[in-house]
Length: 147
Image 1 (tube, helix red, strand yellow):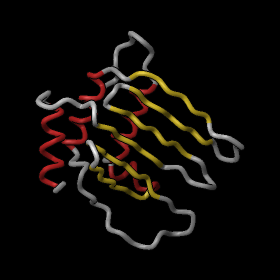
Image 2 (cartoon, helix red, strand yellow):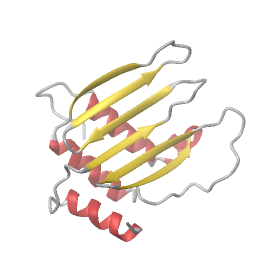
Image 3 (tube, helix red, strand yellow):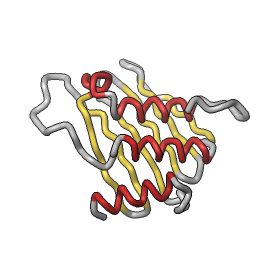
Image 4 (cartoon, one colour):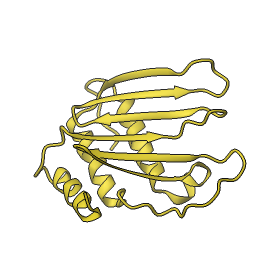
């Protein structure tokens, strides 16, 4: 799937011109030494959050439902941020430096972009998507969304 096709598919989902049942989004900043999170939201309306605390022997895992409106809001944010384009140039990592990765999948086609974890806040791109994913996963049934 070309970059243009990825953009078109995401725009169609955001405008309700395409179902999002074959859509999924995953953010992953897990580091073997420092821990981190991996959160996945599916178009079927489910999320799974894996959280590994630094030094903890096991990760905690939670899962739940995500309303369709939150999924569409995530897709609109992906379109706004052109999340199908890798902006950070590749280079050798510094000691203990890790990447935060974002994978967008529609059907059998996936694209992964990344940023250096320590640059997330300054870049203001992938971190916004991560924060929306976390907000969607923290909703309680019937509570208003934070989108």
